[in-house]
Image (cartoon, rainbow over all chains, first blue to last red; front, top):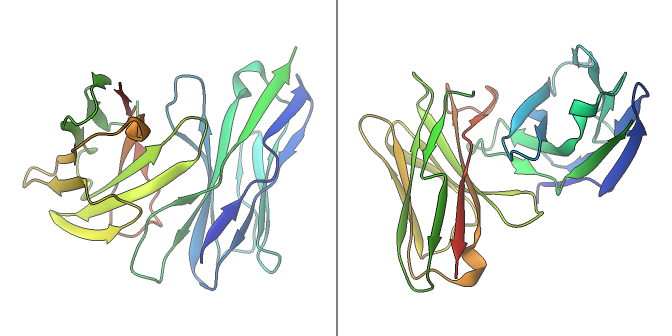
Length: 116
Length: 114
């Protein structure tokens, strides 16, 4: 079964510091995409970053970067220079590309608190 | 603003009732996905439509059904509602039927069953 695990229900970081959110997944597929979504108190789901499994290079979007370890099936999100606006729930999501269904499988989320 | 619209924003109804949630995808997007997010949980995939046809089914109850119309908007019908159906229901759209192209989420419909 394809599963996504986020083992940190809650994390805290000081403003301007760096924090890493963990995500592991289980799949037998070889072709897939991974995503991090942010859900602020408004509940809107906002795409933060995506990673194609066939790419070895880790994705980066401004202050957000990932550490993608395909063999270990690990996909962590690093937030640098944390800002108060980064406080939100963060969801890791997996999307297979070869099984004929392209749904997202989400983890249970990590609540990030940013301390001033 | 993702370009995906959902109506209504909030819905309060009683057990046993039936409701319809509506979703309009981004312009040009052919795929629509429905997800359910119960309180403080992750999102659970319910169903996907592509250009009017059902493409994939997830953990969708038999009391729930969906369809996508020729103008590509989609409706999720929930019947014989139970207290446990209270949740945030998200619709998402993508340009292709492949998940490689990220899904853009609507603002959600918050359903409260009393």
